[in-house]
Image 1 (cartoon, one colour):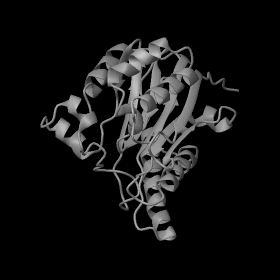
Image 2 (cartoon, one colour; image 1 turned 60 degrees about the vertical axis):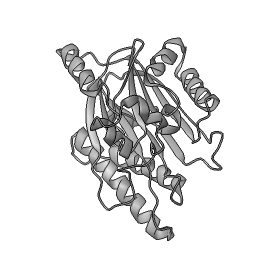
Image 3 (cartoon, one colour; image 1 turned 135 degrees about the vertical axis):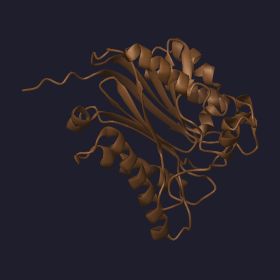
Image 4 (tube, helix red, strand yellow; image 1 turned 30 degrees about the vertical axis):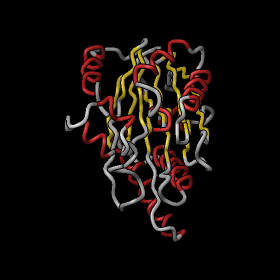
Amino acid sequence: MTHIEMPEIETHCLTHIGNVRQDNQDSVRIFDQHDDLTAAYGHLFGVADGMGGYAHGGVASTLALVTLFETVYSSNGLSIPQKMKQAVQSANLNVYQKARELGVGRMGTTLTAGLLKENTFHIAHVGDSRAYLIRGKISTCLTKDHTRVGELVRMKVLPPEKVRTHSQRSVLSKCLGLDLFVQPDVFEVLVQDGDIIIFCSDGVWSVIDDDEFGTLASKAVSAEQLNQTIVDLAMKRGSDDNVSAVTIILHKLVARQTKHGSRFSKIIKRFAGRS
């Protein structure tokens, strides 16, 4: 019998309606630690933010995560990157079809998810929720915002520090559910013991600077405390949206460290400054 060494993961997810909205259109989900599928396929996490300007944003975000988990935790012979891409595309189609079934016109959602397999995080991303990697006290945003403002930053028309206060910050250029097809960002990041991954909706990162996530993480004693601190701070600072976070703390990983140090440095340089 083959022995599969499982990583030790501390994780917690939290979502709150916030101070302004009348309903919570965010959804969060983490793997079931007692499910045998986790051992076979990896540890899956996700956050989705339903679009407030369209009907049934909460339905869209929940359906996206349900579809994501069902697709990833299925045996179809695909590689992990292929499976993550397929899962996002299936979620997109299901949200698109659900809108027509309900007769509500258009509804949509962001989706940012990660699958941890050994010491590699496979990330799939559409929209403006974000994934952060924290190593030590250094926080790096791994995802790029699929927004009009994000595009202006990447074109160097707008400085990155203006993103959070721009009047069109939340205008998405890509999301799930509005069209029959969507092209997600799918990439991988190598991780190591002690790393922390945070997935959050824009109701969180819009009022918390990137480097603050590292500072907050360095003071937290658990994933649950860090999540609560992040959500409380976002609300204290007057976030005008739902606030949601998924925190993953890696305590033990399968030992495959060959060449990872240099590759990780290149990966961090690749993602540094993305918006």
